[in-house]
Length: 73
Ligand code: SF4
Image (cartoon, rainbow, N blue to C red; front, side, top):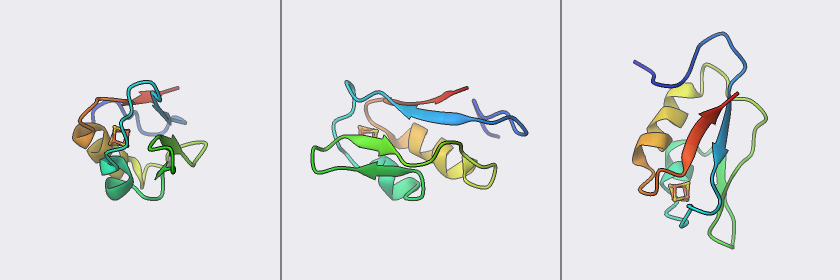
């Protein structure tokens, strides 16, 4: 079951840059969505998360040790 993701709606995902510590677990879980820069801050590279990629993003949210990733509308 996906928590946070509501299928059928346009969902965005955001990274709180103040909390991010560059662990790169998000990038490993969903490389199509997250990219960690040389500054060790993860950034979202897509405008919206497709239903197909949602499970990967959910995994990234769970794996992030800083809880820096969240769904947004
Ligand atoms: S896993 Fe979390 S803390 Fe690590 S780079 Fe990704 S968003 Fe930042």
